[in-house]
Image 1 (spheres, rainbow, N blue to C red):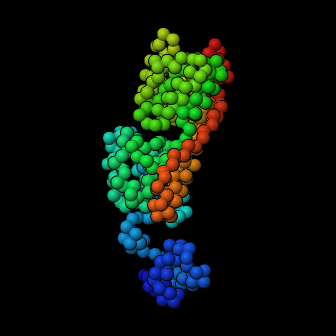
Image 2 (cartoon, rainbow, N blue to C red):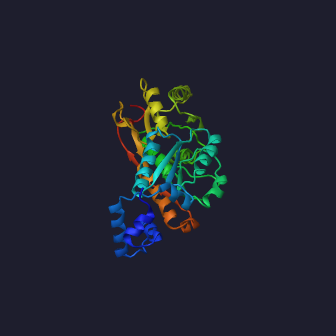
Image 3 (cartoon, one colour):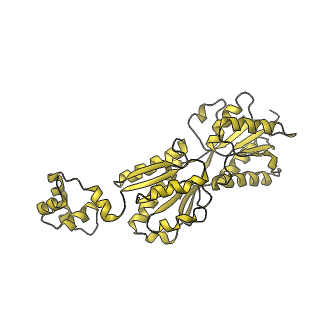
Amino acid sequence: MTTMRDVAARAGVSTKTVSRVFNDDPHVLPATRALVERAMHELNYVPNVLATTFRAGRTSVIGVAVPDIVDPFFASIARAIEDVARGRGLSTLVTSLGADPARERAAIESMLGRQLSGLVVAPVGIDHSWLERWREHTPLVFVDRAPVGLDVDTFVEADERGAALAVQHLVAHGHRRIAYVGDAVHLSTEANRLEGWRRALVEAGVEADEDLVRTGVSDRDAARDAIAALRALPDPPTAVFSANARCSMALAAALRDDPLAIVGFGDFPMADVLTPALTVIDQDPYRLGTLAAERIFTLLDSGGAARAAPVLSVIDVALVERESCGGRGPAG
């Protein structure tokens, strides 16, 4: 196997210069770079990644930890990170955290123990202060959901504004009894969306009736139970705001035979071909993943200097109007 020493001998330079060329050091003279690259090509040189890992003290891998890699939203985030990492010559290691906050730390620490080049996390837990000791030597970026007790770069979407847009749309169609159906309200995403639901109702002069709030809805059975409980109220809702795509998919089945007007937060495959097609607050998970990955590489390229002032970046969302509000008020 051709070694770095062989390349150095062919090019007439030191092994350190070969290493600098391979790592794209901008201080290498163009003529020297051309000599080394020609020698690499002539000798069909393949770098010893394992040796590089030992020298650098970390693997050439970006970790990605999301609640559920099967979920289209998080799968898109992971794909974006993979695309950015591949463009920089790194691979990705992806894990699903599940829904139990108590299991998050063990799963993330298992990944960090592999000496990753960086880690992007879409969290499920309620405390991330324990990650402080890790961020000293591993770039960390949070995505979609903000960390708790930890100050790191975070990329989220305008959850409160998006929920308010959904409720305002339903109010414009004449609805006043608008239910909130969500899942885990301890997460920053849903907490903000619930606040957006409340704010939009109050601004419209409508009572934000907490009896219309149903949480813990993550599957069809829970969705059927939630809708049954809402319909049993003395003054039942005429419309529903669904706080996430998983809830929306479950509600589509629960409302199939006896529909209510509905707007969901987050698009998903087939949402536009349901009957009626689902009006949604559209997100851009691929952009979120891209921004998070690019931030990891900014941290790596700066040698940690960029960690001094972590930022919270909020990505805007938009209403995609389809048919699930019917263009009619509750009397329709």
